[in-house]
Image (cartoon, rainbow, N blue to C red; front, side, top):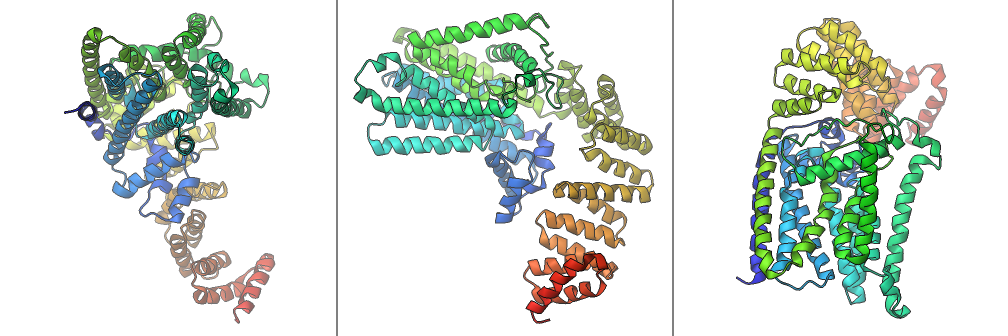
Length: 638
């Protein structure tokens, strides 16, 4: 077996071990915001590939800018519906692909350092990439279905970086521009997966500063020899500056006052968030160094830094990162092979650690930074002398097996929804959301009476939290107390009038309590408001419920047809309009809607009689519409 074959075989073994570490993840259900991003996103529930399906996926989604991620979820549904196993399998395979892409990047990085093909170089490529694959801190990005967004963004960012290095080191012009074009396209795919891929230009700028045309010792050469590198470096610099300055400009619009204002839906300002991130950064480092399952948590509870001394750990954390940046810059000047990974790690945190309206801490934010950090052990292994390589590799393999076992244990916990959410609630006892999701897990397991305690605790922790009240109402409904549920849903609706899940569930509580007339009106009101707000997919369940309660209501059928039409579902709309007209053919609105939909579907001959009927029954205030219909009838000779 030659060295190349041996390398492929070793890497294949690493992929198998990593896959085995994630086997329990295939049993995990839907978690946290998987629900509204995927389960409750009908536009991603593809049953066929069509232009309409793509249009809906691009428009009616929670994160519509993340096109690549959303389409991947839609394709998952096309293949296997809402069975979470298929989604988890794709996530794991994408993780293995990201690890493989990282191995390629590591090889290119070491070749830039003129490392020769040797056992040391192969170890520098394979071992760090394997550590990345097996590191348990990545379980949140991989096992949490919706964070496929993070994995995809990292995968395309790593591939783009690698393609950039290939382009920068290619001698032939056509190869160089082919690779650089591929790098740009891959970066766009990363941006369309998740916005944190925007850090790539800054990483490339840093690489150029460390190794390329922006280094001072390169400038001393002749202009002709330096010119190509200067162009590439300048392009990276400009692109990086545009992305970073543009992102900050969009958020703050040049107003320093916004740094001190409380961010929407948060209890901290932009400045407080940045201060807090200094401490969060230390938490992340600790999780990288010592990632035992007992330290990992889906929903960490971190106190906000209100100032440099509140809490007292803020100032030392700010000082640490200030010194870390200075040290990394100095190291990058003297030993760029080691300084660059540190700068890239810090740079990859800038967006999600910046002054933006984001949650304070999530472990999945370590996915791309950790990949960049793996360049550091790669460089160290590649430069080891032969007599020290074997012990280092042996120690690395022991660490890799330990990390893999911790990943397996962590995934096993994820696979038990009640124990997983109980673990979160115990680690973050003062966070209402942790209690809410524990209550939800208990509800889904049919243990509604047990769910009452965490649901009530969530409301006690924060009486103004919308989701806590929503979940308490759900528990009351599940325990046979619909009147109590209705009261809680009304309180929740008052907290956030822009949300309609509480009013919808209030209708369910009224229905359960036997107050059918009130429930019908509640569903009608919710459906109308959502339709007017341009949210037809959310309106559909409410109006479908209204039709179930009052199938004899022509108005309800007509309104349901309207939201189907808004959702670009003309066949479904037609069925509802036909039902409305069967029940009441004197409804001018329903008759007109029926005629218009028939015409839209190319059934003009069938539409004409209904247009004629509309002209007969239309009230006076619809004179302009009647005139347009008459003109249309004259055009077809009727």
